[in-house]
Length: 230
Image (cartoon, rainbow, N blue to C red; front, top):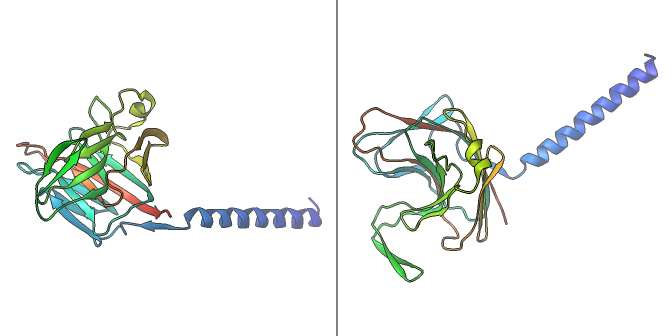
């Protein structure tokens, strides 16, 4: 190869690398980490008494017997956003990601479609993106924790049901904007809901209650980041 050709190839390579770097930087613009990999600053536990800890740059939620559903919640609320994270759950433990969720200091009664629902003080409630390692495989479906129950299950979404990887790392993408909530599991569309009951609230990491079971089960989360939308 001649020297001019070498110089041209080097210039072309430099241009390509610079372009990739610019686009990569743009892709990251606006994203914020909700977990720095070292501590739980910015989070508060609500509900039950499951254990939350940090190990190897991951948040680890561990079940304990005889306690209700537990939630590690952001201290601030979010309205319109894209949330991305990875999770790895042991078989036998149900979990989920709360979005636009709330917790009242005093008991309240709210009404949905003419039906009153009593919400006790301290009860975490709101939209939950399901983590379901059971044979049902509804991971990525939308459940209304503490209020209406299932909003979007995955009975009719076989591709999303098959996207879940048991006892391996999985990826969620959750988009909330206006009355729209959408979820993806490992890049596969899972749930698409329009619901305007709660426009804003905290994000929470659930460890579901396990009743009297004494053998600890855990769920892990890492690379938790959020991009707020206008």
